[in-house]
Amino acid sequence: MNRLLRILEVARWAPSGDNSQPWRFEILSPEHLVVHAFTRKLGVYDLDGSAAEISVGALLETMRIAASAEGCAMRFECRSGAEGGDAALIDVWIEEAGDVRPDPLLPFVRERSVQRRPLRTERLGPASKAALESSLGRGFRVVWFESQRERLRMAWLAVRSAKIRLTIPEAYAVHCQVIEWGARYSADRIPDQALGADALSVRSMRWLLASWRRVQLMNRYFGGTLAPRLQLELLPGLRCAAHFAIVSAQAPSGIEDHLRAGAAAQRFWLTACSLGLQLQPQHTPIMFAAYARRGVRFTEVGQARARAGEVAAALEGILGPEHASKAVFLGRLGRGAAARARSLRLPLQELVLADQTRPPHLEGGRVTER
Image 1 (cartoon, helix red, strand yellow):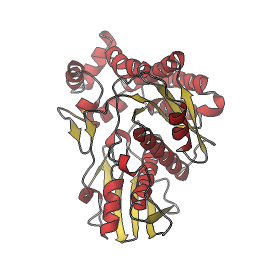
Image 2 (cartoon, one colour; image 1 turned 180 degrees about the vertical axis):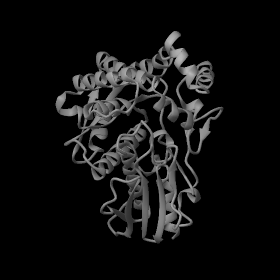
Image 3 (cartoon, one colour; image 1 turned 135 degrees about the horizontal axis):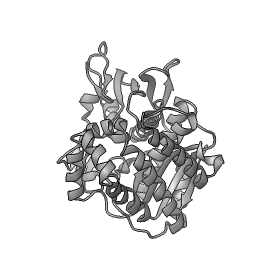
């Protein structure tokens, strides 16, 4: 059992959107556990659970990396009929294997973090790009955006997406839940010092988020979205070595596709960390474009739905029609100092189900215990 707990202690550092950690572990034996993956009701930032499923894919890949340090292989299987509810159940087996060697990415699992501040603009070398591309494995490729013009186009795409999330009440509700104010570190949210904004902007954000009415007034009369979009999206989008898109060979259509995408993204991110590169994921353009393509009424704000259509068109214009619907992960990266503030993780004892007859559930977009 100690071996399994050591593996889970490493695996819990896998990334997840807004540090939501949409998983719990049900340990059945020293070699077998079930991951309860919460794939619905994670707010407007998740479409049909796809973002959460990608996070769980990163978790499973991290679990595999951690198992390699124990001389073990890992395999998993989604239980049939697991899709469609608020949670998916994934059986995981840890088995000794004589030919397994420690994965070289293991030392970077805890070191990996999000850097939302500007980075250096020096170009990536061929060796670094080759290492990042080969980290993905079969079925995925990287599309790079490195020139100043390309970085500007990707930065404006993020700016346009930010206009949506800063003007809809559905996103406001998420923001109120996921930020921990006055914090450098947070076990279950994003500390405000890791947002990438200066101290004055953070204080302004905290005051604004105390009331949706305040947000509406600032947006309507005082250009409330302008400063955060410039500071958090445009400037960092220009100040980086490159933007990138991880593209699948085919458009993902279910949980197994999203799990594979999450595993590929985690290996890419860990490889970037091993090369001394900082990274910031940028999921919202993919998500809002998907809402528009599918005709999903994700908000009652009509202007925001129209802007989502514009984001979809812009994403297709940048990636090309053959890649836009197959993109599973966007981000920017470059050299720079590691983030001084970051999200941590819940301790393992809070992630392991103690009372298996009373599983956790989702309440207000967060995982809670009954």
